[in-house]
Amino acid sequence: MINFKRRHFKQGIIMMSMRWYLSYSLSYRHVEELLLERGISTDHSTVQRWVVRYSADLEHEFRRRYKKSGTYISWRLDETYVKIKGKWHYLYRAVDKHGDTLDFMLSVSRDEVAAFKFLKKVIGSSGLPDKINVDKSGSNEAAIIRLNLMLFKLKFMAICMG
Image 1 (tube, one colour):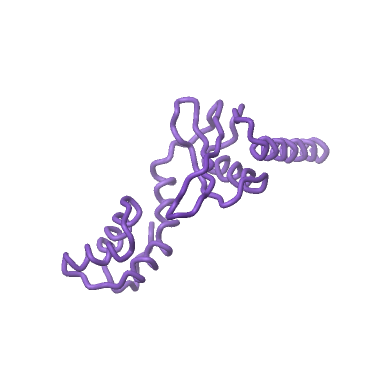
Image 2: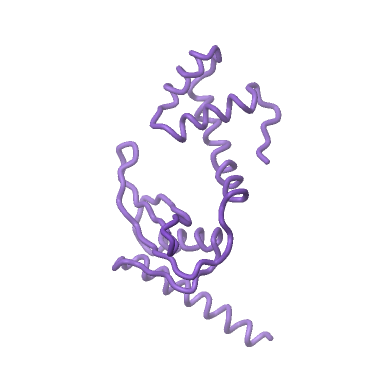
């Protein structure tokens, strides 16, 4: 549960402000104006602090409550180049065999480190798949090879120890 204790504004106001900012293409100043129209006087920097403070907690709570759990047989892993607020980023995403998005991540770079970081994130949230399908991206392939080597070493160490 997200802790809203010792806040000047009530939980409903904070959550409504964050929903407006995260769901729609609004700036912090636009959210400030929407709150002012409803009789709530706050500054745009306060809304920004709420988003920074609570957005990760909201994502964690959502995944805990609503995310399907379990290992999927096969994934499709890809990345694309998207422009966000005037800057180009790589959007990594993993999709299961039913076409449902398992996880995604934005990254400034497209390299093995970023692909491996995303691979760890999606495995942490959805479990280890039997098969991963990728496009001809060298970074994704290198990350999968690195993951396979790690798993092989762990399995080898378990055999030697046990």
